[in-house]
Structures are given as C-alpha cells and as structure tokens.
Length: 98
Image 1 (cartoon, rainbow, N blue to C red):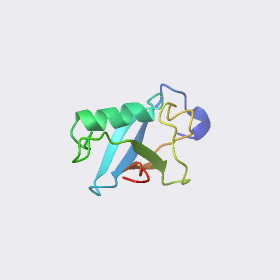
Image 2 (image 1 turned 120 degrees about the vertical axis):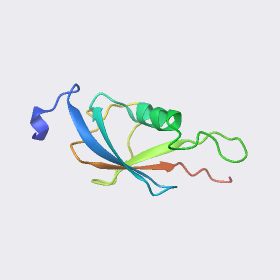
Image 3 (image 1 turned 45 degrees about the vertical axis):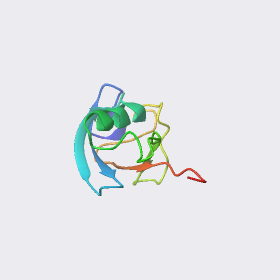
C-alpha cells in the first residue's frame, strides 16, 4: 500500500525495538494508535517496566529508526507519518541528575 492510500483506520505492521532488553516486537496496529497507547499496552503486557528500582515511574520515548525523529506520544501514528514496516525504538527518557 502506498502512503497516499492510508487513512487513520488503516492497519500497519511495525517493529517495536525495546532498548533495555533488545527485544523486537512485530505488531499490527491501526494508524490511529498513539504513542501513549503503545507504551501503556507494553506496560500492561509486562514487556516493559512501569517503575525503576526506586519506585520512580519511567517516562518512555518512541523514536523512528527510519527518520530519527522522536514521536509525540499524544499524536497518532498517522499524524506522525509512520508507515508500513517502520521500526520504532522504545527507550526510557533520560532525566538529568537521576
């Protein structure tokens, strides 16, 4: 499917690479999915931890390997021009002083 044939209800296949474990997850999602929904799903499925060893919540980032851009978690994949077979890197956001 070419990019101009997509709409927000289109389903696409993605690879989510989890930085701390090195795992690659092949998933299929609608383009209306937000980054927040992806992170929540991975936490709910125990694929990624919600908190660090001290009990502080992790803040995650999704970065497109295809263009190197950090995704805005509240925007849909469609709005951020994520396409079929893209790879997204999921990593905890580094906070200075922690």
